[in-house]
Image (cartoon, rainbow, N blue to C red; front, side):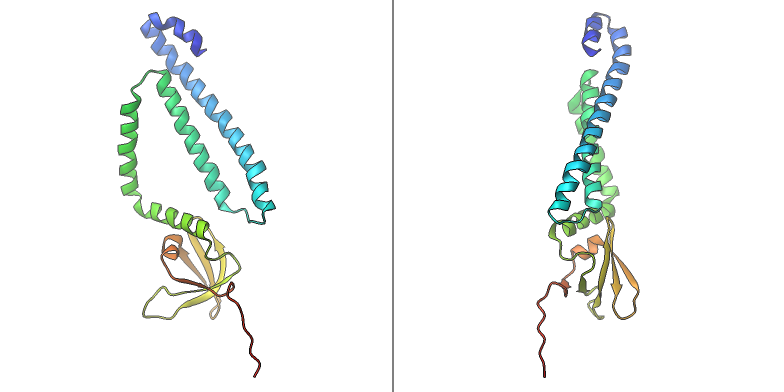
Length: 190
């Protein structure tokens, strides 16, 4: 359809009117198709590969799938803009300035996301392990079992009081964490 639209290039008004709808439909259909294919590939192959290697599939797969969809949408917007012969340099500069504004506005949310990525890459603890963390330099350490690691926070069930402490991942990424479960245990008989 877009090739046939180029035949109307002589008639600028008709070309502009029909081009908007044709390139919009083309960009949406390509984005939808690419999103479905990437979703199938991620869910069928990547998740099965992680499970075969003994890993646990958690929210990381959803984050990767969402990131893939954002890249596909950006590609579709660029395809739409290129079809309408818009100035891509001006559009990318506008997106860059808008990205800086959003980054300053959502600084705390971005800190949490980066903290989550650090925890998922470094893996200092996993759900079910016992850890000891000091949140207050003048208080005592928090000792407990990791209940879950989410996209925003980590839940720790304390050993003494059996309560749950919910800590943002950005704070956990910056703390000294002692993993008790991974330590070698020595038993001495007296």
